[in-house]
Image (tube, rainbow, N blue to C red; front, side, top):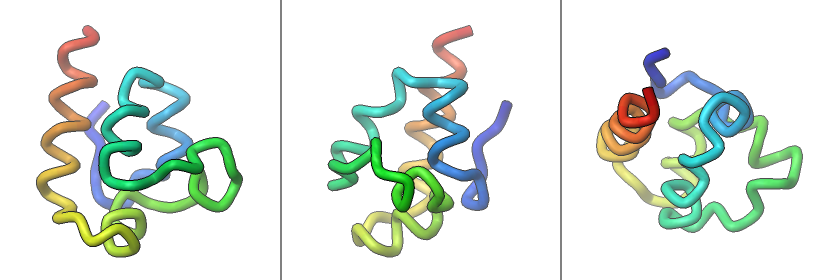
Length: 67
């Protein structure tokens, strides 16, 4: 699975829970609350001032390494 800017954070955490530290690194400290889990990657990056392409590269690399 390839993660895009439109992928929901909760979906990513369901299929690849090991990516949680990547979201914590950008300041998403409330990964368990429904609001943050319902955001897209793009929305999370906008809120936390992170370049979406940088986070996508890290998340996709982490998922690729799991397989």
